[in-house]
Amino acid sequence: MPRLWAYGVSLAMLALVTYPAFEGPEYDSFPLSSYPMFSEGRPSPEMTLTHALGVRRDGTLVPLSPLVASNNREVLQSMVTIHHGVFSGPERARTFCAEVAGRVAGSSDAELGNVTAVELATSRFDAVAYFEDEPVPIDRRVHVRCEVAR
Image (cartoon, rainbow, N blue to C red; front, side, top):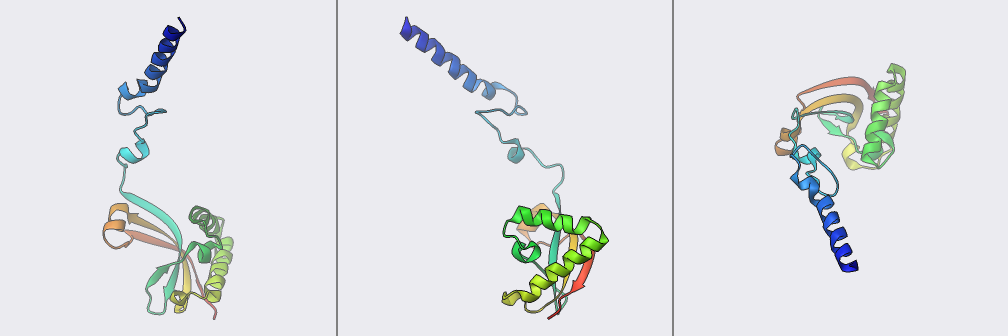
């Protein structure tokens, strides 16, 4: 009898574990997952990013690293810091821009040596073209620009 009980419990557990596999593709559950965040199409191939950019002497732009842009090495925390710095009002945006410009001026990174200004901007990109071609924005809105004092 104990062996029959063990077989019954094992069969019931197996049925519970495999049940999600027989649901429609829109159903997602533990332990079998279709990972819909990766397997479903995106509604738009565009992404919007608020970021800090360095403006070189020749006018070209260079994205600033998270450490320079927000004094933080963590990319997502940096993104949130930049977003708050830009969208917490015009005075805060100017102050935040000046802080970023100060970090650019104090940086030992040779690539930032010819950066003369900082722009805090929101850019819209085609996400596919961003990785396949060159990351050129569809459009860009500059919220604030400040000079780098050297």
